[in-house]
Image 1 (cartoon, rainbow, N blue to C red):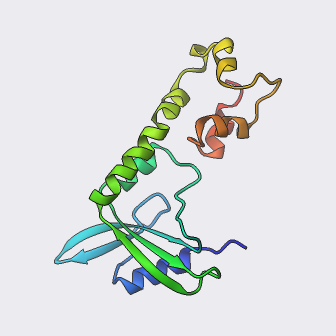
Image 2 (cartoon, one colour):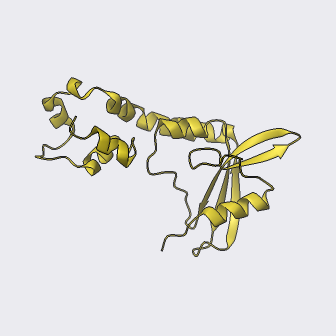
Image 3 (cartoon, rainbow, N blue to C red):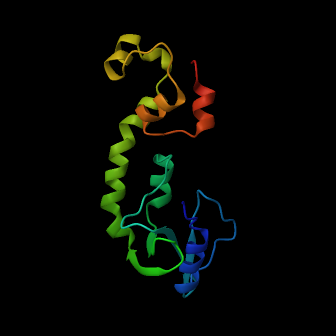
Length: 158
């Protein structure tokens, strides 16, 4: 059973006296700490496991979003209702991890931006197994999900 993390994030916000941004969106800041009129952006993560995952469609936009943010991790019991403990990480603490993730996807993202005509069929076959038809899942596996599903569909057969 998947446990939704909205209620867990709301609990972290309340517990640490944070607030939701005015124009909350999935791609923006999760929470803000106001300290002496200074607005400090936070990325919130919660989990019912011993580790935290990030996102499925990880790419350069996430790197931009995460740089300079403070992080708050909430670790919950298996059912997702009871908070066991929290961890805090400053932007300086997260910088090496963010750089590592950026380095991991940068070449894939650059490849995704190439004009398809620049990639010869023989080069493609050096990278992937030759198939009659390639699926969206094939593209996602090759490019580590750099695009949304709709963006992959828009680029199909180019």
